[in-house]
Amino acid sequence: MELVAEQAEQIALLKAENVALRERVAELERRLDQNSRNSSRPPSSDGLGKPAPRSLRGKSGRKPDGQRGHHGQTLEQVGDPDEVIRHELAACGGCGGDLVDAVQAGVERRVVCSVSRLERSR
Image (cartoon, rainbow, N blue to C red):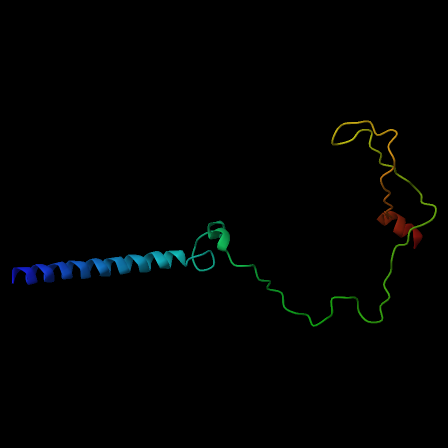
């Protein structure tokens, strides 16, 4: 009888411990499920598992290209520009070597148009 009573007491202690552990696991899982969207935590506390941002903009129904029938306008390059600016390097950025006799690596041409120039042409 003593053995049965001792085992019953131990079973009661284990059941109480089991209930306490289940409550603790539930609390820890609830904490893990919190993020900046469903609690007062800052977004920086979300870590790497934060959800992807979703745009609040709706669809307009229009195609992303220009509208049908509109030909557009492009500022064409001119043969004789008002000003030419050359940007030349005197030394290599990596080794510091002299670039005076170096072969030209490339050319970029750009059209820069100021507002005042546009107003003068109207």
